Image (tube, rainbow, N blue to C red; front, side, top):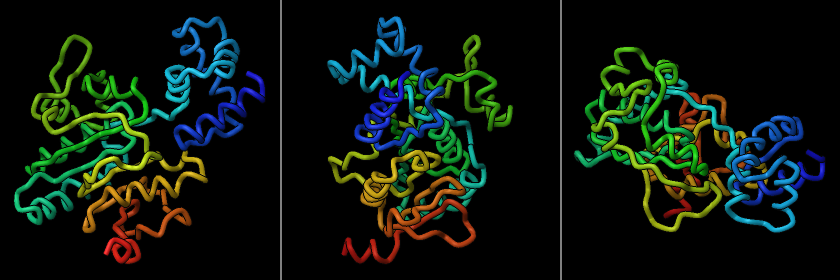
Length: 271
């Protein structure tokens, strides 16, 4: 891959998806694009990119972008966040909503482990939820919707007893049970796109996503998250993630790493 090709990939990622592709990832990018090139009928990555630059095709462009997104995830990643969600927030919000389902958004759900972990936590808490899980990658969403994982993938975060209680074995795979599947709806969404409806959520999980965002687009992403969160709702970022100078819409909850609520400035703006 030439430096010029990589520069164009950087622009493609930033403009279409809002994510940055740093120079130190050039070799990784070429490695990830190899399977895409073969799947699309090109002999080399260079040939695929040359074709894309000469005659941009939306489907190929998105296939390239999806391959370069960070797919890393696992069940109950950052366990403390799930303990706070299931043992404290869900019971409180369940009462506050008068028995109506608590609405949860898993933004940037990758292959689905976060969404299923949220459903498991809700089941354990005995609180009704409606979980919407979104990602930019169609291939990741296909796996997420299947609810099928290897034993290794499930036990990377879940205890064996939880696996047996919440998943059914089917040959070499373990598949999320029907009662979990009823709680979760998967859909494709781009965090840089403004919402096209007025739907809001009580809790938003957007963890280990925005650190890879292009600095010029992070503010837009935080604005879109703020519009989707109800005034008394909560936003979960990764334990070490902060809005920093990108947004004044959220303030941290003292003693709870990664947990945020709307700031007074954001509430005044809505009023």
